Length: 315
Ligand code: AVI
Image (cartoon, rainbow, N blue to C red; front, side):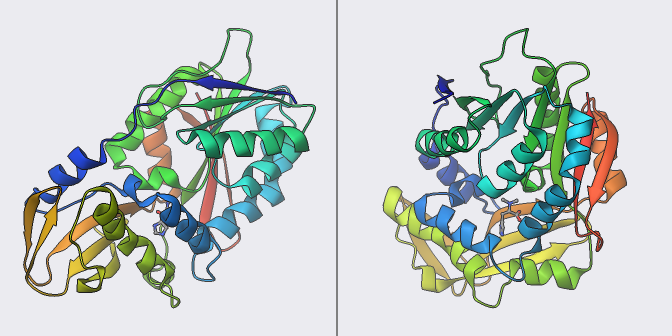
C-alpha cells in the first residue's frame, strides 16, 4: 500500500496540570481539547449527525458542489496536507475532486491517523499517503521536501472557531510558514447568523451536546480521581454577541465542593466552568484575520443560506 508514517513525537497534553490550573482561576475554565476522549469523540460524531447541528452537512454540501472549483484553484499536482484527519467523508469528497499527488494527513492520535490513512490509501491507490503524527496546535514538523510543490492545506470543520482569535492568527501564520509563498489553504469557517439557529445547534433536543459537555466531568473523575457528580451540574450554551461566539459552560446546580487530584474546588450555586468558545465569523472579519496572518483571500464558497463558508486563501 502507498502509505508511509512519520512521527513528530507530539507531547501528550498534561491534563492534570491544565485542569488544576483552569479550576483555580477566578472564572473557572477547562480547554475544549479535553472533550475528546473515546466517549467524547463518539458523542462529537453523534453531534455531527444531529438535525440541529448544520455545520457538518453544510460543509460537505459545499465541498460536493464546489470541489471542481477548489481543484482548479489548488491545481491537480498538489501536495495536500490535512490538519486533523477528522471526517473521512469530507476528505474523501475533496480527494475525489482534487486527485492530489501526495496526501499528508496530520493528527495527534496515532491509532486514528493510521486507521484512516490506510483506508484512504486503499481507496485512492494512485495517491501517495504520508501519515504524520503531530500536534498542529503547536510548532510542528511535516514529512516535506523542497520538491513537494505546490502545497495546499485543508482545515475543515470550523475548528479554527475553537481558537481564541489571537491564537487562530498565530496558527494560520504557522500554516503559512510551511505552505510557503503561493501555497493555498482551504479552511471551513462557520458564519455568524441568526441566534435561533446558533442556539438550537448547541442546545439540541436529544441532549447530545449536553452529554458531550458533561462527559468532561466523567473524564476528570476517571483520569484525575475527581469527585464531580455530573447530575449536580447542567449544560449551558449561549451566543455572546459582543465576542461573536457560542460559549459552552457547565453550571453548578448548588453550592458544592469538588475534589480533583487531591485539591478541593468550591462552587457557588450558578457558578460555571467555561468549557468552549466557538467563534462565528462574518466573511469580511475572517478575511481580515487571514490577512493579519499573511494570507490573501482568493475565493469563498458558501451554501445558499449562508450558514457556512469554505475559504480559499493564498499565502
Ligand atoms: C469541533 N468544533 C468545531 C465544534 C464547534 O461547533 O465548535 C465543537 C462542538 N461543540 C459543541 N458542539 C460542537
